[in-house]
Length: 553
Image (tube, rainbow, N blue to C red; front, side):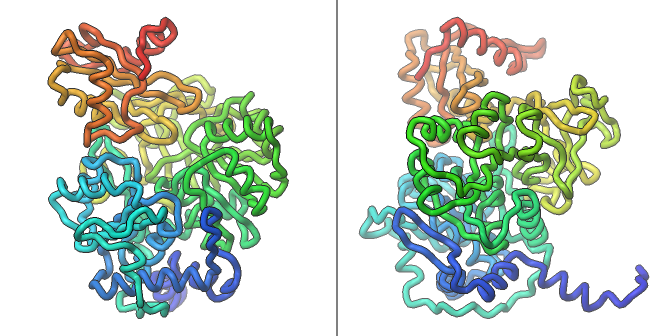
C-alpha cells in the first residue's frame, strides 16, 4: 500500500505504545501522590505511585516464576485491592488478566480453568471451598495458586496454595524490565460469558479495546482526574470493570473507592463521607438506594451522576431516582463482547425511559429482520416505527475483537461482516432510539447475571428422582427475572424440598442459578419433533405465578 507520507515512526510508536498500561504509567508519573485507590473497610489507600509499586511486587513475583507474555492469570475476587493488582500486574509482563464470577460453582470454575489453562489462579478466601473443589475436578492444574485472604480468616492457605502476602514478600517495588514486544493487538484482558448450553466463552480484549473503552466512558460521563468512582456491582462484569471501574478510572487519573459488597446504607454513607462523584449499578440497586435515601437521607450532593445498565429504566422509577438521588441518571445497553453500545443521558430522561437509548459516539446499532433459515444481512433493516421487531446488531470496532477464544463455531454464529448479532429482539424509532423487547434464545437475566436454562436443566436432570424438567423465568421486581423450574418427576413421591436441596448442593449450579420457583407437572410443551418450547412455558409461568401455582423456595 502506498501512502502520501512516511508512516514508519507513527506506525512503530502507535502499534507498540498505544496501550492501557502506558496510560496508567503516565498517571503514575504526573499524579504520583494523588489517591488512586481507597478501601473504606480497612481505611487503606494507595496513591498512583504506591499502587504501581504494589503491582510491581506482584509482577516481579510472577516473573520470578517465569510468567511471561500470553500466560493467563485467572482470578475470582470480590471488589478489593487484590482485584486491581491482578488487573494491572499481568500487563507488566505481557500476560493476560482473566477475571471471572466469584459466584460460579466448582464445576463451572473447573470448566473455565480447563478452557483457558491459566498459569496462575488467584481466589478470594471467601470462596476457598469452591476453589479447592474446582482444582480437584479440573484436568488443567495451574502452576501457582494464590489465596487472597482479604477477610484475614485463615492463618494458612490450603495445601499447595500460598497466601498473597507471602507470595509477594521481599519482592522488588521497581518496574519489571520489559522483555517482550508490546503491541496494540495483544490480548490483555479476557472476560467470561456463557453460551446457550452454558459452555464457557472467553471474550478477548486487546490494548486498543481497553484504551478506547476508557475513552468512551470519559466522553459519556464525562470522567476526569477530579472524579471519584464507586461500583455497586462486581468488577468482573464488562459493565463493572469498564463503566467507572478500573479501566476508565485509572486511565483518566480518577480515584476508585472500593465497595466489596453492596449495601444501601454503606453506599450513601460513603458518598457523603468521601464525596464520591459517580456511582455505577443496576436499576434494582437504585431502587434500594432510593428507599434508603427516602427514609434516612444523606448529603449526596457530590454526585455528578449514577450510571446504570443491565436492564431498562421504567419511567416512574426514573422520575423517582432523579428526584431522590440525582437528576443525572444515565443508562447504558450492551454486551460482554462489546461493552455498552446505546446510551441514555440525563437529557433523554424521563421521556425516553423504557428504551435503551441510541448508539454511543463511536458505535452503530441497527435492528434487522429475523429469518428462520439464515442470518439477516446488516442492511436488512426493519422500519423505524417502534412497532416492527427485529434483531439488535452492533458495530463497535473500538471496543471488541469480534471473536471468542478457541470457539470458532460460536464466533461465526455471533459475528458477521463487522457486526455482532446480539440475539436480543427490539424495535427502534425515527431517531434510532432502541427498545429491547426480549431474546431470540432462552437466556434469563437475573440481577445482571446471564443464566441459560440448558445448564440448569442438565443439572436438575441428574437427580434420580427427576425424569425431566424445563426451566424458564418470571418477572421479579428485585432481580428483573427469577428462575422457574417445571419438574416431571421420576419418583411420584419426590418433594420440592428434595429438589431444592439437590440444586443447592449441586457442584454444577451457582447460587444465583438455583430456581426460585418450582412446579411439579406431568408434561411440558413440545414441538412435533419433541423439542421443548421454552417460549410457551415462559408464558405459562406468568399465569401460574399470578394464580399461585408456583411454589417458592
